[in-house]
Length: 132
Image (cartoon, rainbow, N blue to C red; front, top):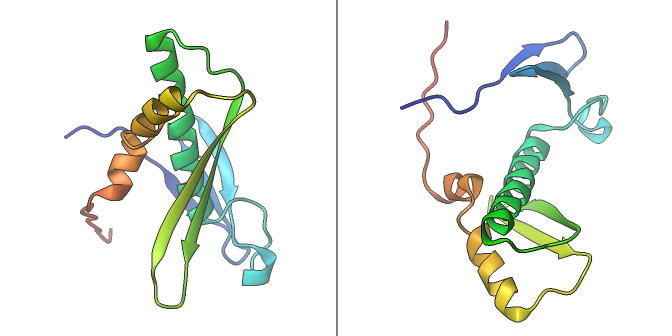
């Protein structure tokens, strides 16, 4: 297997705050003020939803380029839902500035179901942890 992504988080002094390094990028992670943090950066589930939204946008653009389709302006919104029973689901919305035909909608929904991050989230994933 090859590594396709990696990240490191250095814990900072403020409660729940950390400095994330991923490749050449650095940013903060934190919890919202309501959860005892300072809201200086996205919380962990914010990164999860951002990952799915950005992967969806990139994959749709790649598909459109390959098929020579003009999608125009669009955005992708993702919400992670949970409840007390620990039932979880994700709602993803792809919003186009211009109307999209029903045929194209069906093709794009199919593409969305096959994005790399979608596939990762839908299958079980083995997480191995080592304490160093």
